[in-house]
Length: 478
Image 1 (cartoon, rainbow, N blue to C red):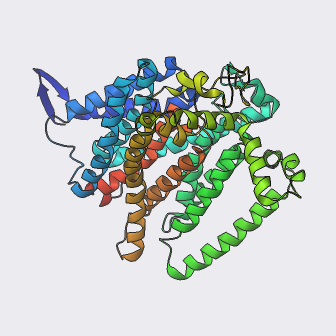
Image 2 (image 1 turned 120 degrees about the vertical axis):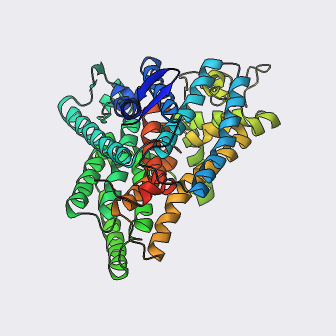
């Protein structure tokens, strides 16, 4: 073991690296069990552990790099940071300009901590640690699924860990696992589904691993069905579409075609049968009154009526209020209303603009009956709070994180390079996890839940670590 002397003290670098690794792992594994680390009294202790891990890795970094590292792909690594730094700098500047610093600080950390986790995995984790955190996260998600399913069978999710569950979800008989909201539990299960599909569909993995992937995917689907999350239902279809496009790329040509068309036929039949059933999950998708009384209307009129009815729903009210806030002025369109400001400005923009105090005319939608802490649409909230500039700057790292592993899967298909199957599974898993959050974020705020953002960072960073660091790309750890 190598000893380094810093400020006159001797530190064992291997011991420090192990401590730093555990400081990263603890928040990622504990966060989902602590109600997603949503409350500040859970969020801040776990965030502090992540900052301590970064400090330890900084101490270890004074000197030579890890013995595991044999080189880096500078083009890939540089491209990642170039795509990310402008957005983070813009976010920091806008946070200092925000009139409510505490909420701006939280918005900053919701972006910064996943970047910190991903950066540590990519730049500082050894090959064994990269594989280890994947296994630990998989086991943790499996236990989360088991707890959510068993707890719902036994208590109807009236208990969430040691606390009482939300009454509205108990009445609707929706599983919420260790989260208070079933949609956020479904978001965690989407990560498990991504892992399961990644292991199941990747060509060349061992039979036991492939069977485990199938079991994990089934367990995740059971959890999603019990949550009755409509957003998760649509998200699963999107994930299966990406799995169909990318999952069979590494298969030999004859098998690839048969697997694709056979799976497409089987999936279509399963969706048709499930959509035709009277499962309680499907009843949440059906709006019989809206369709029955619009059956004989012209299509354009029917669509307009449906949109007007959608605006009266809770999410419709939040979406339209956020849209009105973004359109306040030319300045807000470009720069946004400020990080974390949605919850503060909601009362101002909640009511529609057709009211007139002078004439005593009430707005058609007054929105005085509930408060919106989040927009329930991460994409729209990003646009509202950071404006067009922040939204566009965010798209660059988003496209990089999606494009780099996708491009590697395509290149593997075109080459004869015998890449390790698990590395291919990691890349497919990352694509599916990012797809899940990109789709589900259109109708919910999973990425405002710290634990879900941290787990997404892990799944996205693991394949990037193999692409950036040649030691991971060229050697398979046990």
